[in-house]
Image (cartoon, rainbow, N blue to C red; front, top):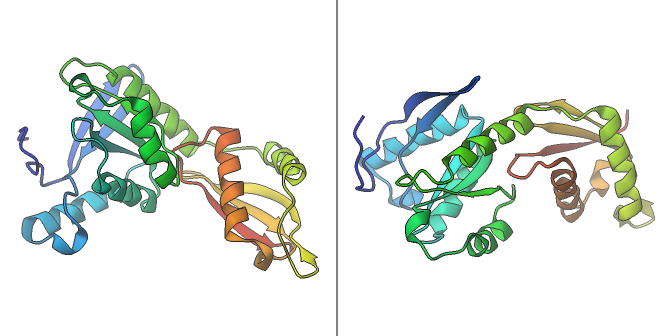
Length: 231
């Protein structure tokens, strides 16, 4: 393994096994995605393909933000790659010992533009600050990523939502949210039965997704919801 401060040194996805107490982690270090897709060529193009393949087999993705440079557009693009690969996502702000940027500043720039609302952890490789919290957060995200919400708990929550916000309507017909269940883990997927899926608006679907995140502490978790007609 070659280690260097020079950006672009990592080319292949490298697996490293880390054991912490009773938990075993497989860490995959990938090449950074430093340019826009249409500008990548040669070795950098194939390094990107390996990074995307690594994301496809990961449960939790750590999106590394260089705190000395601040948040850049490419950080958002990398976070979107993780989202599309269905990874639970954690934003890691590195070099925290040499930056004057506040964590709230980073959060304000990132959160409105990241659909999964991932948590943030500030770390310093030089001092070791934040590494323990980073691993704690990875464990928590994986537990949520692979966990299951009971059908009873989910439907009690949907009942509360019906009281909080009236579902949308089209013409004389109004959406009726009937019941739901979780049908998949790693990542969680929910099936919600309604009277007519065509009545579900994008705004209402996003609102319900965010309510699920807030209520069940699923920040950073890719949540999929299928609205299906009651059989």
